[in-house]
Image (cartoon, rainbow, N blue to C red; front, side):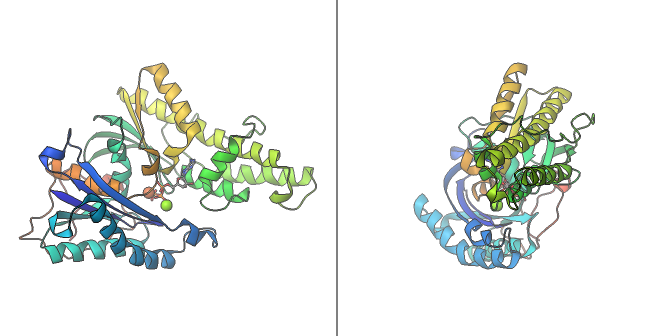
Length: 367
Ligand code: ATP
Ligand code: MG
Ligand code: FE
C-alpha cells in the first residue's frame, strides 16, 4: 500500500510517499520512496518567530505542488495512493487544518482512508528511516522546538512518559538564547555553529534540575542567566548592543550556553537508560541534529555499552517523511484506520495533544 503523508503543524510543509506493502517493508518499517519539504523560515525571519496566519497561508500555497513533486519523483500517481496521512497535532491550529483539509479531500476524492498522525510520534519514529535503524524497546530522548521528553518506547503506539520539561523546551532554550545573542530565528543551528569557535568554560551557567533525582528538565532559568551574562559583558566592554561586542565574547557565551543545555540532556538521558535497564537510546527532534549533543551521547553510550540511534540530519526537524513513516508503521502493526467503506471524512485537529493519549489500540483516525 502506498501512503502519502502530509506535515503542516508549524513552519514546514512536508510531503512524503512510503511503500508499506509487505514486500517493501523491512522489520515493520516501510520504504521511503520520495519526500519534499518547503521551509517557511525565511518568511518568518523578519518577525523573529512564526506568524501563525502567514504559516497557514503558505501551507495552502505549498502542499499541492509538493504532493505533485513527490509523486513525480517516485514515478507514481495519486490514484495509486491507498492511504493519506496527515499531522493531526500538536501544533498551530490553522496550520494543522490546512494539512488535515487537504488530506481528507484527497482521501474522499480517492475513496481511500485517511489517518491523523501525532507529530511527536512522527519525530519519535524518524530514526527508523536512518541507515542504522533501532529496534524496540528503547528509551527515547525527544528534543524539539516545543518539547523535551524522555520516553520508554515498547512498540508503535506504546509510549510511556518518563520525564519532561516543566517550562521551556531544549530547542526553545537554544532559540531564545540565540535571539539574545542576535543570531536570528530559529537560532539553534546558528548558536551551535558559533559555539564551535567559543570556550565553553568561559561562563558558568546553571544546569537546571541536573541533580533533581527525577527525569524532568527546566530551561527557563538558563535563558535568564544568559541574559544576565550578556548584560555583564555589555557593561564590561562599555557597549550598548551585542553586535558591538568582540566576536570571541559572543562565541564564548554561545559555547557556554550550548554546553549547559547539552550536559543536562545527556546526563538525564543516560540516567533514564540506566533506570530502564534497556540497552538502547533513540534521539529525535530538531535538537537531535546538534553535533555536541551527538558527540557526548555517543561517548556516554559507548562507555555504557548502550546503542544510540539518530534520525538522518535532514529528518531531525519537521518533515513529511516521518508522518508517512508513522502511518506505515501503524498499518504494519495492525493499527488500521477505518476501512474505505465506513470512513466518514469528518475530521478535526488537536493543537494540544499529549502523546500519552495515543493508546496503542486507539488509532488516531480522522473523525
Ligand atoms: P515540536 O516538534 O515540539 O512541535 P518543532 O517542530 O518546532 O517543535 P523541530 O522541528 O523538531 O521542532 O526542531 C526545531 C528546533 O530544533 C528549533 O528550536 C531549532 O533551533 C532546533 N535545532 C535545529 N538544529 C539544531 C542544532 N544543530 N543545534 C541546536 N538546536 C537545533
Ligand atoms: Mg520548524
Ligand atoms: Fe516538530
